[in-house]
Image (cartoon, rainbow, N blue to C red):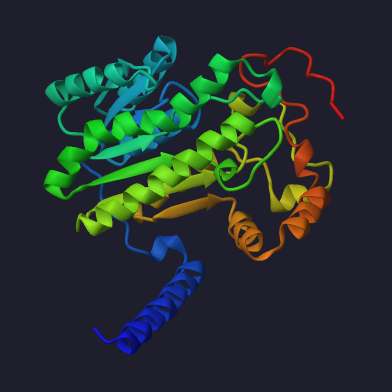
Length: 319
């Protein structure tokens, strides 16, 4: 194809993409086409609590058969009980997603006992929330294994059947920490940047393979008010809280499920993060640092205690 024609076609594609994005921005989601997930087999990792449990319940109510994975037997039992009481089909399995062989073994059980997974939600995650040099080596490794490397094993376990049938959906619950770095989250940010890179690269591979009916959604929320981030505060300034509010788990779960139904390739929560992302690309590093100082983002994690230490006195703020 002549280079001039290729340039023209590329420019037309860019214009079309902008117009489409503008229409989707204006058009309420209730007027857009939602796909049905009735009869799908949806697997949610980290389903024993938090948004994992909430997403599983919502997917079940839309007609999907649920497969729950978690390392907490008590959490799994509770989520399974809620879904069963709600009338939905559900199976639960203890699985440490950072253990490659366990993932493959449990995945084989799922295939035998339930069937081929068609919706995979990689949600399991952990956070340490400490200064880098104060974080034990094994905790650094565990963060990378659970938040990023585990996606290799779960996707390798379930993607082949999706490719064979050219049907499926992979959801990565990443984080805005996979786009913007914060102190006291060195390992967490590294793992979420890795998860985002994995997701976007795999998406390109599927497109090149022509598997356009295997959809992917990368979800990047700001801090969610679950036990995982107990003690986190954005700012005492009301305008910062309005721009970057702490997110309710129900809101995030609703947004994720809606993104699945609309086949959205990417979701940033709240919507103000789309603007922040564009600014970060355009602004010089020094200018971005000035904006971060204005929003006091470097102190977001100052009061962090997390799920394990919830209820204990918060640590003193370190200068």
